[in-house]
Amino acid sequence: MGTVYYVRITAHNSGGYGDSSVGLPAKPMTSPDPPHSPTLSTLPVTSYDSDEVGTSLVVDWDSPKIDTEHGRPDQVGDGGDLISSYLIEWSKVSWDSYDPTVWELAVRDSTLTNTNVEGSFRLSLDTSSLPVDGAADTGMHVSANIPVSVSALELETLLENMPNIGNV
Image 1 (tube, rainbow, N blue to C red):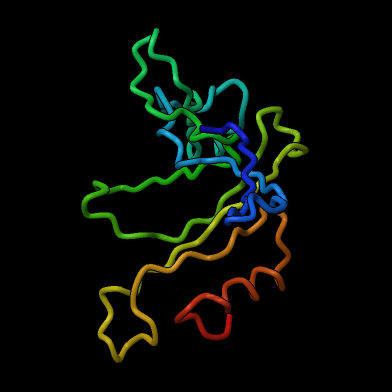
Image 2: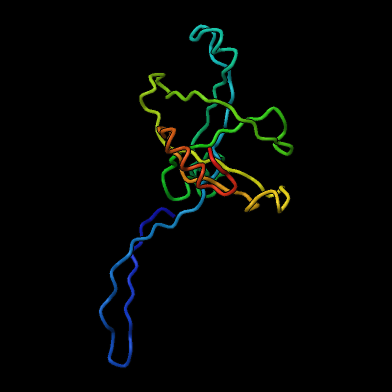
């Protein structure tokens, strides 16, 4: 996985082979393995004010990679392409009985300068448990990629393009 292959097609009949089609690049990929060795800790009291320390956690992990020499269970590592983002979720209840909650996030880069924050995220809406007449299109729906630098107008447009979301 992750190797670029070039494919072209040539037709053959009793007169021989014709000209080849234009070559097309393809890069087989799959979803990556889960991050390895996640840890959760609190902020150091000496480096932050008490409001941040009391309401913040530090999540750390190793990127997926194939490394069987060190006992890692990874099967496909990054899946054949660079990891572009991570989804971090939290809940006060077990994931088996998870009920999504809306939270406001403050995102900072590791240097705390807010200069390297980039990427995108997606929002999901599950209407599969709604009565058929309660939603126009029941099921699990996921938004397009939403850049972290999205404007309010762009976010409104992206959300309104999802099934079962009216005016935002």
